[in-house]
Length: 211
Image (cartoon, rainbow, N blue to C red; front, side, top):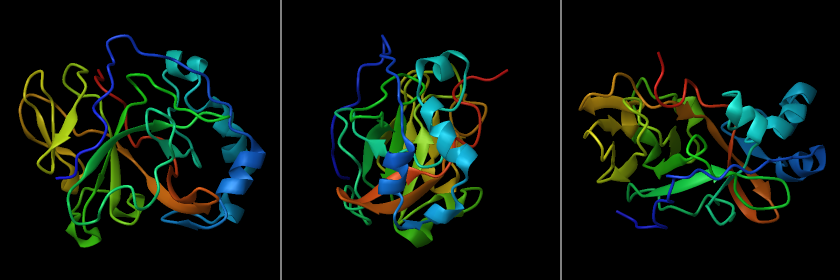
């Protein structure tokens, strides 16, 4: 399995504001696959980018990602379509991008990005929410909110040994977690930095522990 940057320390989450502008969206979304084309992005969706990953949204439990948010490393480097090989079950820890560069780093925004051959996904994975073999899930365990990580093609919680299957919608296959990790729908778009991976909407379920 491909190895990448180590998991970030999340004991003291860093909250940073994200302000994405219409100019940035228009520049980035020149060609989208796995989602609507740029013409399909509504005014409301583009205006909503200013709240993605912001401190206010975090405190209110609002969306970490919205349509058009680019995925980046902890250092703020954009995720290109070639960041992971399609046949190695590789993984990366990624975050939503903030305006001006950099990453919105917090416990809630931490995301596991994995890549498998496109034909390997099974229901209940939202296959339409995968792109070029990439799939993304929240990195917050649904049991007690610990940070999970990818290993040997699965997603593991180190606290109480819950195991999730990323090829089957991150369903729980072992341990005490009560429900699957929420999936982040993805698309790709051509940009001056390359063909980039981005969110096409928010996580498809509540992040972490829910009651």
